[in-house]
Length: 285
Ligand code: MF3
Ligand code: CO
Image 1 (cartoon, rainbow, N blue to C red):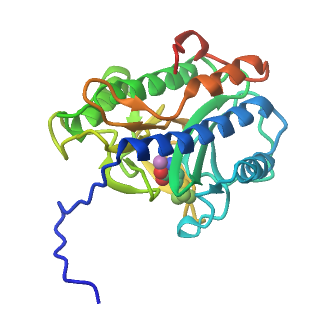
Image 2 (cartoon, rainbow, N blue to C red; image 1 turned 45 degrees about the vertical axis):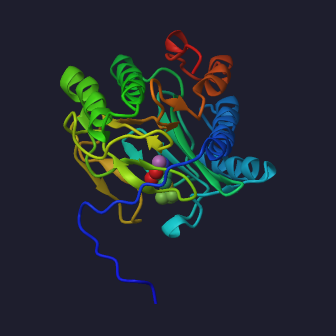
């Protein structure tokens, strides 16, 4: 029998990582980045998301890792592939992607016992000016959040930065039901990292905290619903939603970004079937 534990709503168990553990987590995060780069190579109109999911599973296993989403609380696929109005947790299926679709590719791995979990939103052809801006702004908000992930700040500083840039500045809908999270030997650890909140609120950030920060931003209203399958999250108004996710470690003056968008965006640029609006704003990561 375990000892008695008194849980309160503020109970939280944050697991800090040593430098050595952070290096192992970087390997896990980078395996996700290289998997997403493989996806960037083959994405085009006409491909099914189910075939992408198969490739993702094989690529991860070929690199001595395990696709961590598969069987997580019963999730039945290797990856989450969320098209247009699907916010997150989209099931891969047999329908073909078409020109103008956007797709969040969210991948998780366990490598040497450590989780990597990150995501990127691609455009199959030109999704139009409104969605192009949504993609750019969501990606920017992720980096603005990461800028706040330094020791001495609080979780709410990350949340506020993301909400300000997306909701306040552009009037986009910030999803409330789903949040970023701590990451480590478990896919979801404390603390939660909401994409909305007050400056100076929430748990204090300390060196060695490893977080998955993942803005989920809607072109229209913030409201979402979950489909009958128990997973697929869609916008209520049917408008598109964008999702970007990085794995980071809190440090003193600047967060250490463990995952790497430059690997993905190099392939995105080379693939003429993809609309690459991020090319001009990519600098090192
Ligand atoms: N990035 C997502 C998350 O952190 C992926 C989890 S999907 C699941 O929640 F299938 F594993 F649940
Ligand atoms: Co995540």
